[in-house]
Amino acid sequence: MPPIESIPEKVNRYTELLLVSENKYEIENALLRLFQIETSIRVYEKCRLEYILRKRFDGNIDYLYQVNRLFKKIAQLRRKEQKIIE
Image (cartoon, rainbow, N blue to C red):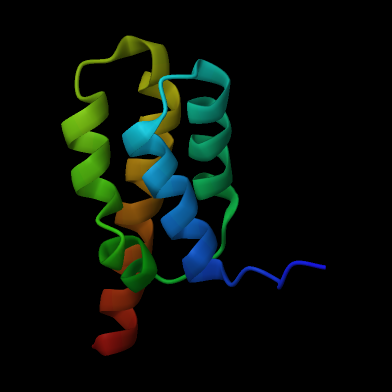
């Protein structure tokens, strides 16, 4: 039985998939899974998710809704982290 994947490993796997896959289903699934994962902003930052989304999907209307949802989630997590720090 394969070992259970940690949340950072999942985020990294789905982020890597966004970089290499050309399959629309795989990309949509990765975007959905990244949105559904509950974790801190640091995990997304470590995987450079925002940079990859901007670099790969900027101007791509096929994934506009999913990408915007992820950007909103990242912004929300960042605000939440700022409140904790203050």
